[in-house]
Image (cartoon, rainbow, N blue to C red; front, top):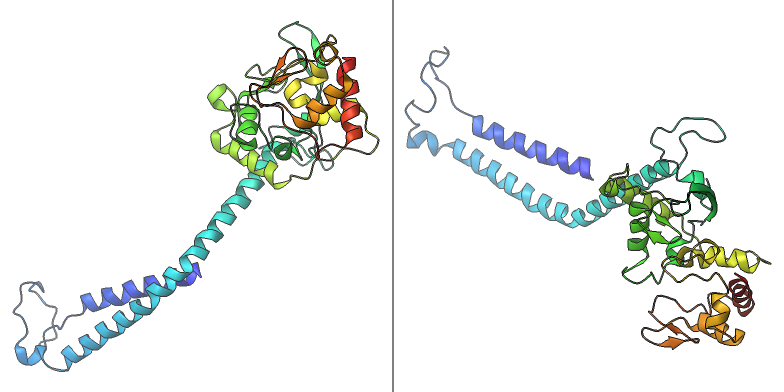
Length: 313
């Protein structure tokens, strides 16, 4: 449709140009005209009112009729054309994002990928997570941490941490600024990728990666028979840090959860309902609204396993 519209417009311009360039040369000598057309005497009324006027009027009527039909058709087709361009732009963005995410060489075929920034090195080729070893700036020692999967990251942050309007804003901030144990901007575990924060990627490249991640999202599910540690790593570590060391959410190490919740049942009830802004919980806690309700998202048994794991830290 787009090519047809362009062809029709070009043809229309050619017709108009031909009409404007039409002129009558000398009728007698047949020699090249010496006087510029704009300076030669005009035609008489007899000539102007001859069949030439009829031809010009017919041509004008035909051209008017053409535009009267073409413009409404083009106008009605324009929304579909624009939607098609948006869809194609999104597809191209996803394709670029997939290349940025991938390794610089295909792990199976060895085919080079010069666009790769190797997100897959830590998060897995299939986006199901993995491990990362880095130098902890706080201790000066090597640490190995579990890297979360990304196939359910937008569902996992359906209710984002405080200060973020939605999951995409939080995911973008994490990619741009990096983080360590859930703290954005430290960038020892998760590097800072945006060139706004000293990283190698432009805003468009970061957006392409986000579009790719959104295109591969799946419902977050817990493996059957998963331990409390595995469930915690899948759903809780993104806020509370690897092994509960803290981040956006409070740390859970040193037996702190057993102190805050002397009763296991109170601990379970809190996880099910989540925190409410300004509402006390346990013995010393005060809700911020950042802890989402997990009832319905995790089974009672899965919540109990998480509680047992948290109380063991």
